[in-house]
Image 1 (cartoon, rainbow, N blue to C red):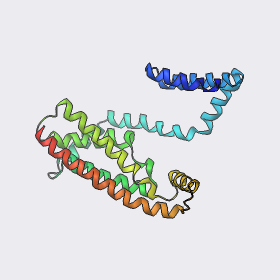
Image 2 (image 1 turned 45 degrees about the horizontal axis):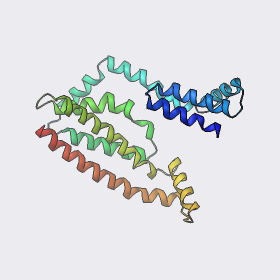
Image 3 (image 1 turned 120 degrees about the vertical axis):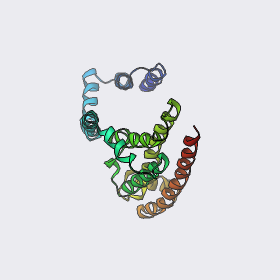
Image 4 (image 1 turned 180 degrees about the horizontal axis):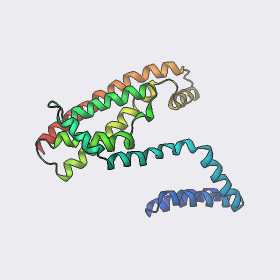
Length: 218
């Protein structure tokens, strides 16, 4: 039971709002030492896990690139481009982005867009630029608009990625159903993910329409 001490470290560390990375590393060290591993063996295991999953950290290479583009006026250019579209509203803009995100996710291009790559440097400035054509946004409206932009990206990916056949979640669903006596093929799961993606678009699209009306009154 001592190996579960690492969970206690995580709970206490997160509750006290310590640095998440430091909490996880300390929890791993506590777990390894409680399991009877030598300190160097624990560090070696951490290093092996990092190098084995280093492809996960490749996304962080995008961050300095986005920062450089923003420094040279990416957000300002995005605002200027969308300002010339007279029929654009924040809700309509986010609805278009939702379609784009769902289509690309359904094709397996999940990393093509995201919070760091598109939402912060492009989608949010464009939505704010459209909203501010009438009047400046107050703090509450600005934060809610940003929340809707982030949510649109999450909804688009989460409910459309299963349409792509070669995704890990398809195999997870298949394995879970088979453990409960339900035999399905990955293709069948992929096909039946399409109605879910359509329903997600309808529901979130309605929320974006309501957000437009709220923003006009705010």
